[in-house]
Length: 343
Image 1 (cartoon, rainbow, N blue to C red):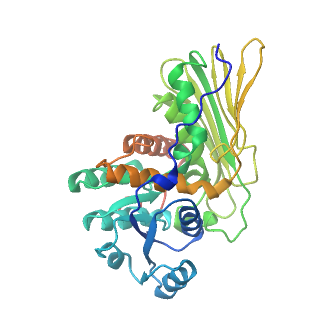
Image 2 (cartoon, rainbow, N blue to C red):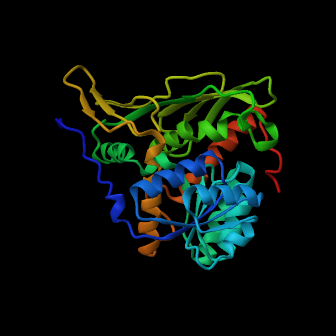
């Protein structure tokens, strides 16, 4: 039995080649992304767009970005932009990413890649046809913490994996967009993507699925739980809620022991291995920098594009589609739909 956990193999983000980025959207995640990437990498932000030109101008002034556009189309047409970061609302991910791809831009699309697997598949096929890079900005998979998990699974430290547990719950103000049904609200796309993607990453796409949900007075689903089985006797139990904060932990159990990611498991933090039957626990530590660590995904995108890749091996589009297909199945069983997702 090993006496130490693997060391993350994450390259130095400051050594990633510098590309020219355009940002679609000016909300909270766009703000955090730009702050993180500018502080920790050599990437350049050259343009930002919003449907409201004044908001784009304010965002540009805040970060010293030279060009602000009042439409997403105008940013996509800017020949000085190498890669577009799509940070709009969920329902706009598909049209915004499509616009970028059609103009020959590489795209990093904030999670989820689309409202459903069909939309994500459309983007993947379009990007492949145009020969441009496309990835989902599910930032957890680019963190050093997840690379430790990746190596533990590869090396068989856990033995035969049989169980995955993951949850993600937060409290939200009544005015938050997650409370709005017209904006594809509810916790599944915002929070549930973390436990579901973790489960499908470890076990693959489930062959059978049980799910239940509870409505929220705001008119969206308030929480969802599911049991995912892979046909080989392995199961994942996933849960997400907006009724309040939960431990937001994840664990993988096998015949030799359990790997635990203390909450929030999708952010930077520790990794703990506890062997079955006693014995010393192993712990890998990582500073809890929260969303300050968004820069890891930008650095990976830059490396891939300069290397001529159209996808990242850390979060292939097939994995993003499998996660959305699983969430589609959960929604079908719970009677959850989103406005405009069939358009």
